[in-house]
Structures are given as C-alpha cells and as structure tokens.
Image 1 (cartoon, rainbow, N blue to C red):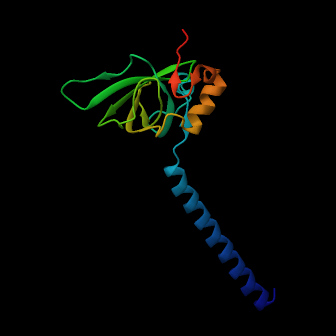
Image 2: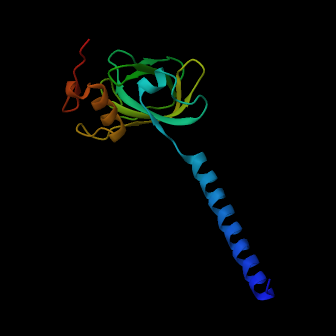
Image 3: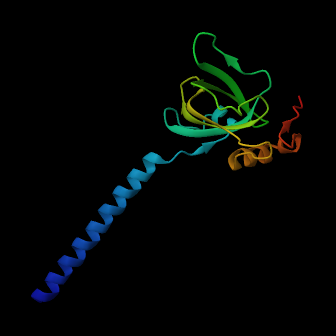
Length: 155
C-alpha cells in the first residue's frame, strides 16, 4: 500500500475511534441523568426499576395524606384512576400541594413498591396539570372526572 494512503487510513481510523469514544461517553453521561416517567399503574405492576431515580405522578387521593407529628415525613397515595402508589417524602411539601391535585414526585422505588421521593412538584395554578399526569389520566379514563382543578372521585 502506498505510504500516503496508509497514513490517511490511520488518520481516518483515529478520527472515527475518537468520535466513537466521545459519543459513547456522552450517551453514558446522559443515561445516568435521565428520569423516566412512570404512572402509578406501571409502578404497581413492577415496571419501574427498583433503586433507579424516576418521576411518578398522578392525583393525590382524598384522605391519604399522613403527616408524621415529630418529623417532616409525609406519606400519601397517588392514583391514575386504575392503581395507586404510596409516596414517602421527607421535607416541606410545596404550598400548592393538597388532596385531589396533580403532582409529580422524583425519587426511587424501594423493595415494598413505595416511592421514596426526594422532590415533590405541585401544579402552579388550578388549570395546569403536568403533561405526564394528563396523559396517564386520559389513558386510564380518569380524566373525564377531573374538571377545572377539582377531582371528583368515582368509586
């Protein structure tokens, strides 16, 4: 092989290897920072990975909020109309958090199927609901019971 062609081939291979390594490192870094959204139904059926940080959302069930008197720990249930999942949060909940409202929680699912949240996000006005929660409610058929920020539970 001609020495000039050989040198060009090595340069092209080195560039391809460098680009491949850069892409692999970028994808690896992005994979660790992805928080996939799961509905309460998916969590209840075991589809959410245990120990991996995820986002989960739905409507806070009426009468499900249990505050621990001596700590900032709060347990509550979130539903998508088909299933419910318990969320445990340690900290101060957002001012707009209340029963019957849409929320999104970020945390990890433990071995008992409880989402241990490190962040809870509540909707910011009476007409807004996180898009993931809206889609989950529409999919379960529960959206028709949610009118203007007011949840009408049908049981």
